[in-house]
Length: 137
Image (cartoon, rainbow, N blue to C red):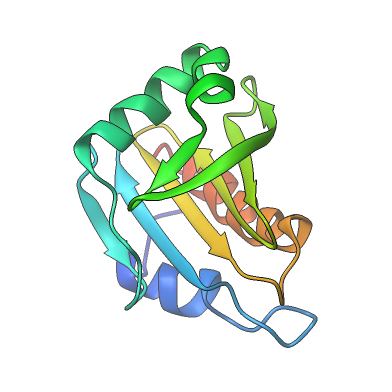
């Protein structure tokens, strides 16, 4: 099966769609492993080169993120869970959180506020990332 949606459509039609609770993620992005943003929600805070480099190292050695935390666009989150085999990292900062899942060639990132749980964020981020991974992306 070939990809038929644009990268931006994955953001708009999957990651930023209302969840079962009726709320949405605050920010979402799909980035390449080089840190280049392929698509993002309007208010995504960006992913700095050094933040991307630290994340990628963290997928190899999770202790790095346990020490430094997970930072996206200058927003720092405490590492709360990870599954290196599955390529997923979850972080929290008060009521806000982030879920990042690695695909073959990129990262799917979802950030949420107090209206959405990290579990809800994980469902939508991981579903899209698994689909992309299954497509070899």
